[in-house]
Image (cartoon, rainbow, N blue to C red):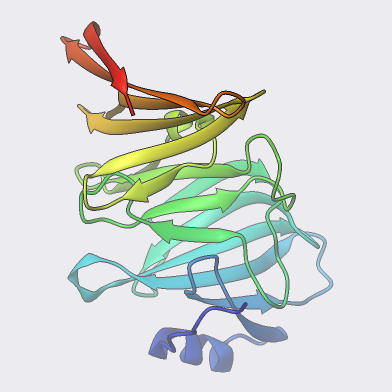
Length: 218
């Protein structure tokens, strides 16, 4: 189902200013995007705009070869020239209904981070590339830790990242917290689907080393 589209003035102006054929579409989180046509072998394929802290806008442009081979991503604020260029080779979903860009605060610091689909295959082993915004540097930094997690999602109520995976008849739900800019495993729930048994393990850390763990039934 198409998500509700919040119209922005910036996206509307872009439709008027760009000479190339452009179609309105949305990102994975429902932000406004534009899909561009054209015959140039390497060109801007799509552009997405979202609001960031301070009432500013962040524009993300996907540049590469049609239909979806992206070689670089440019980022700009409030329509100004790009402040950062990310060189990466990905093949995200780029269609008339969705663009494989995700804006979300993954480390709970109040700044929206950037996710780009690595491939248009939704069941790929590593479907996303993640870039965390560093407010001190004013740039986005790739997070390989997030990329290594299976189906990560955020729990804003506990400021945790939750990853769920399955191995045979066992199902794991791992809870991570951000500590000094890195993800730390703090809790794991393990269920045996064949016996219906369940155990929960809580981890304690000291100086970035696991100091103890506590196990109890779920």
